[in-house]
Length: 178
Image 1: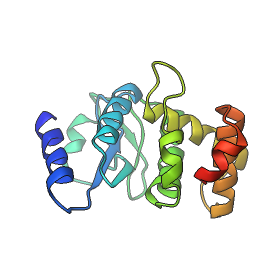
Image 2: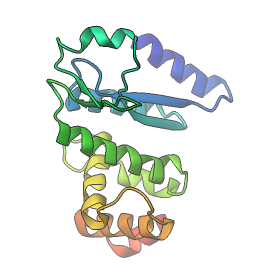
Image 3: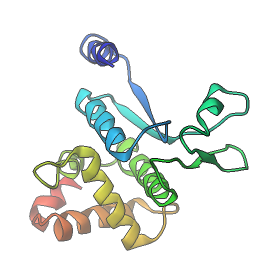
């Protein structure tokens, strides 16, 4: 991990490479807390894009050897997405899946660059960027009930409502960021 951290920092500081990094949720032995720590470390490094994905079991791959030991269950249809593990229940994986979709729509789309520093600011003193976005994701899900077919206007409204109603920012502070 230390070498990966150093390599990513070097690429950001000394090259013109566009860093598209991937984080996979649902690995054997992983908890939501351990994933959040890894996410926060990567966010602090500052790659141009972080892709959030869910573990998939391709037939014949070495991940099969962990299925029983880690209580892993996969969808029986391709792409064989992990459904739960002994450390991650189905509800939490569904919650993360929604967050990953919203992450693509809000962060990876590049539409809300001015908003990200506020949206990713930890909500509580011991919070983290991961949990800040997760809370936003939860609020957007409650407001819309969907992860697809969200127009840019709907996302703007969702971010505005979250930052003003949930985070207590003033409308005059939020509008210029959107």
